[in-house]
Amino acid sequence: MSYIEKIRKYKFYNLLIFLTFFSLILGFYFNEDSTGGAFEDHVIHDQISNYFFFDFKDTLLNYDQLKTRHSPITPMFFSLFKFLNINEDIVRFFNLFTTLVLVYFFYKCLKICYPNINENYLKLISSVIFLSPTIRSLSIWPDSHLYGLIFFMISTFFFIKFKFEKKSKKFNFVILNILFLALSSYIRPSFSLFSVFFFYNFLIEYKFSKKILYIILVNIFLSIPAFYYLFVLDVM
View 1 (cartoon, rainbow, N blue to C red):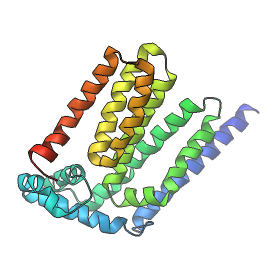
View 2 (view 1 turned 90 degrees about the vertical axis):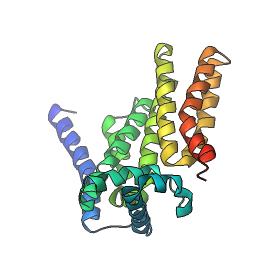
View 3 (view 1 turned 135 degrees about the horizontal axis):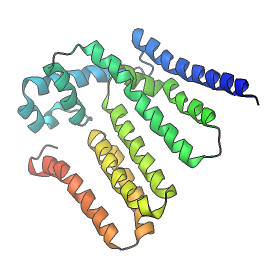
């Protein structure tokens, strides 16, 4: 294949990737709701963020009375935009671009796992995420699911790095994996279940060594705020 042909092929793949993301921007313009419930969930999120804006402490300590299945983290974060008086549509528009982080780390995971496959193919496969009805809806109508998924994808990326990289760097990736899994779990508690899988793999690698003890202590330290919130403040 000539150099010119390679350039043309590269541009062709980039055009396809751009079109998948541009379709997401069009979805934003037309207020797309592919799942049929994203808008309603967003309205609930927005209402809760209003509660945090008007009375942060009371809302935090009585969050269980709101009868929502979502963590308080995301509404707390979005209440900051209300405090700064940023228009909701602007917040929603920038929320679209957080999906790029998800796609990027998915691509990085594929690149590590399949080093012999052409990068253009991997990028194109990654861009299919932009066409997912669920991801499209969560991108257009901000929801905690998307942020939890992004942090989980980053956590998975560091786990894959741990599996493939040299031993001298392995432990750094373990700590980063735990940190981002904790962030994803605080946003979407269901992701915490993956800690069992990750810990099992760490145990296989390090046996009952000091590093395993350190991993356990890091997990305990990162879980203290959640346990304090649930069992000491009794917000359940």
